[in-house]
Length: 156
Image (cartoon, rainbow, N blue to C red; front, side, top):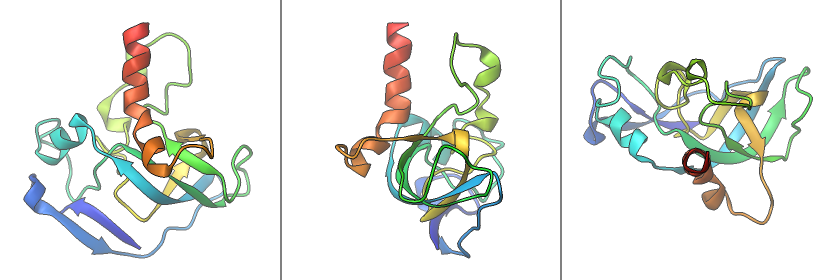
């Protein structure tokens, strides 16, 4: 499995292509083969160290992505192999009114302690993902998580 991470220091020049073993999902986990990732300003801020200069390296960046479910753990209920999915930028915010407890950077994929989407395969919790329509390409779908949240926030 290939992945890109910030190896020793911040900066685009410190992004490195690496190889490692393909992860295996646990009982409550979903293995996704990532097909596309979208870049947002927050991703540049992570890579350059402006978002969190204390971020622990090495780190896999990029918040938004899309892919196909490869395997699911025994206790996963709502997803199955072959499902097309997109990542969620704030997976701990299931709905309702905004509360700051749902938004710490440390729990946002690609921005804190949760690795991002620049990887061939990735393990997710079931509620980290959302099924997407077949009519949209993986590239199109990968652009929606942060942009969709921004649009929703503008309306609310």
